Length: 436
Image (cartoon, rainbow, N blue to C red; front, top):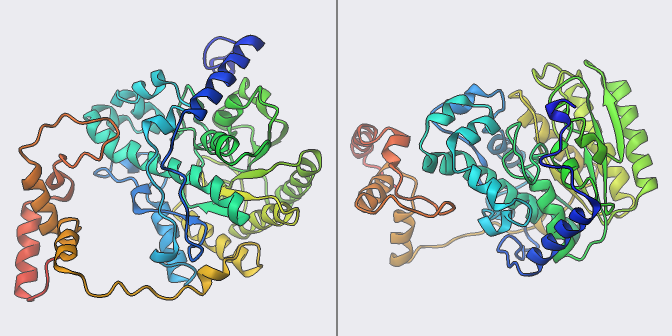
């Protein structure tokens, strides 16, 4: 077999598989997570925070993936008046204990080597960075998005639907990352829902242009999970071994167009739901099927993507099955607008709604107390706040836990201080404006 046709490690016996399942169940039963929490009814079940976005001195541009698309989707939805900051759910960062529900310590330890992360993200210069920077600038955004996917499962079961504006790392399995996917958020979301929400069956509808080999490897022997995967057979990852985990496989040719594609989506989503009745659907809604995508190599129009999402939501929601959506791949700048337009369309056709969020009054924070004002200034994002934090932490030890927020980082190196601080403060003082 070719390398991509090999299992992550040795091919396990049936006994080994059951032992692994028992160990996973035991780990979950002893685990307490902060990723599940109660969400106000006045919030849309839309999950996002600014920590999703990846930016490290332009190196992220080496990869064709738009590492800031999640923030632009969010801004488009705000501009359209659908959501506000106070009606959006902010997730928490997945901890090491959360991740170890799926990932062995051996895999997580491998991420402490920058060269490993460089291979996963396909950005070679990352290998040259100190790992504490890689943890903060690359892996921390992935951990926030993973936390968002896990929370989306809970919210979907409570509200009928949920959308994580990030996530969809479908190339990452328990033991192996790749394809810009460092954590197996889909696998984690389902396993958390099994344990904490009491579901017994789940379905993955993976409509990203690429085969979802990560979750396919993870659930290959788990008959509680049904996987429908419609993908371009001629592109990465060519994972023949993982294909054994697909319940309903639909392979596309290069440059498949709207009419053929949408007919296949209608037929096979319907067929999958007729064969299997899940308690939760995880919809991996990659937009790399867009015409012109350099990696997806399909020819689906923007309107075709919007119609695809409507088909999936309509067929799932008319059966009263909870659905969570993650946004996955999409390698053109226009995909952020398409994702936002698709969500706006789902709202317009009443496939997603939240009456309480729609009617939520504007929150007036009111005047800040002196103590709160000082706290807001110390946590501010202005140059002066950053300079204060940088000076305050400059004498601390650089030793820190792998998953801590490393405030010891030289913020000046990130933002161009202190010269930029000096110039900016000078301009602001001349204008007699407030610094923070």
